Image (cartoon, rainbow, N blue to C red; front, side, top):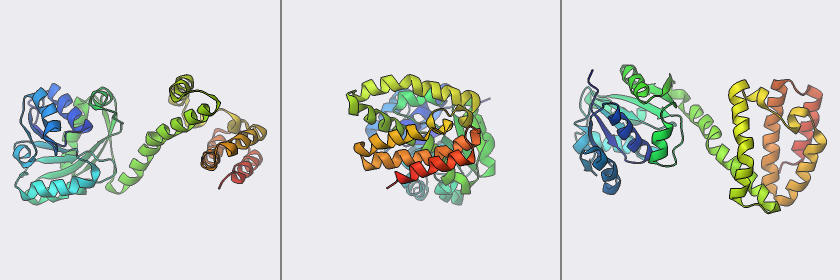
Length: 293
């Protein structure tokens, strides 16, 4: 069974990875467009397809178009291509934003094309890592009902899994993804910075902490977040926490405040785990609230 021809607008990490991976799965590529001709050529030359800074030159030839530009310009790009005759009836236009609904490209409906969003629930440091990380990842699908069978097939061909989501839930969905990915990076930065106060470099700190991080993630994957919780909050160990706050105040107000706010949330997790009772939770709550700015 022949695969639909795709065009990609935005030759960044996600767009480049999608073009390369889907081409390997038998999807012909009509071309690659990008604001930077250098970026477009980098991918297009590998695929032996046209590269351009004028998206309408390649989108009109695609059965499926992926708009993988930064979120802030998706709607503008879709409108510009539409005005220049780059979309046609029967096409499916996907954007890959996690935060926005299919309506970001809703203008394409005016020419008879269908609009949808296909967001990979994954982070990408570069194109190579994007290609390595996409297979096995989940994708959130949302948009015109006629696009879903094709979206599901694309995800399957990428070696991924999928779920559908309502347009109204996209901001909450994306916020959760940011907590799991972006804030995890910030937490690792926070932890390694604390280790620098007794002489370790950031790389040495991460190397020391990484086995703990890896073990914690493994525990979460096996028993879920509440049961994976260990440490002083899970034990109701107030004196240890008071000792932490004493030294954190010397490190800085922001660091102490962040620790306390994370601690308050973690009390909820410990209660869900059942390792502390309401009385112990109240004592821990008082300790953390004293440390908040």
